[in-house]
Length: 361
Image (cartoon, helix red, strand yellow):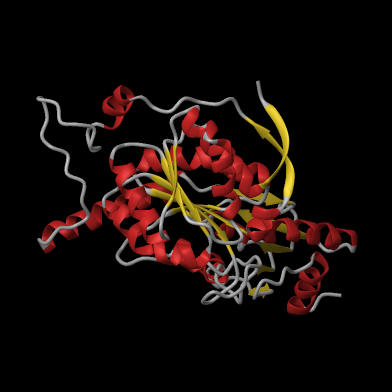
């Protein structure tokens, strides 16, 4: 039976990992996501499901443990916050280059550098544009509630194995630390060795049977023509992802003159700003990207043909705005509003920014 609890966003990530049959978690404490590792340790899933929970000696070690577990066809995940994710970026490029499925959670904080432990959305470029080296993309999910923090863990694994690609859940310190009611699903078992061999044995290191060649998991290719063919193969996979996996939420956009574009906690704030605007007679809507990669370019493209403008609302100095501008194709003005350094904006500030940029009364 489903179970309802009042939980923190970080706590439900741990709960979701155990309940969806995750085989291994490798992480390192860093504010504001340390409760994920702490909750897993308190749950002791190694005694119930056999799940491995390991505090690595560093984020670099954690992401390479992720590589090893994913190479075996296991459902494995890691979590960190902004500076820790930076340390993982080389490993994420290796995982994408070896086409290995995994889930990584980033509960982002202010930067650059060590910055602050307060919430931020300044990791958008890092998550959506790759972060590490080479031509690759992560699939990026952006939760805006504790329930979505829970739901996106099994969804992340589903997408990771469907496309053999790393998935990032890009959250922030607001969603990670807030408490809400969450509906927990029935626990699912970890995959058996036989299941993994049957479903993923074509590429995973499950042990070599007599009827197939060895599976070699690597991201190195010294022949430039072969490397080019592989990069083109990845490019085609990313095209398929963009065609099939775009997720977004449109709030009161049908009659909107102006549309706020926001994700994560900024979307929650912007939704209230939409309510305030409507109370004043302003036709304002909200377009919330649920997937940051693939980005809802088509939805914004369509809206740009009938609205008067967009306001990109972010807890940063402006990153997602570039994708909004590209999607709008210069048809209408696109402005940015954001607070940074760990400062969280208010709905009234968002509304005032909309009025100021578009000269509304």
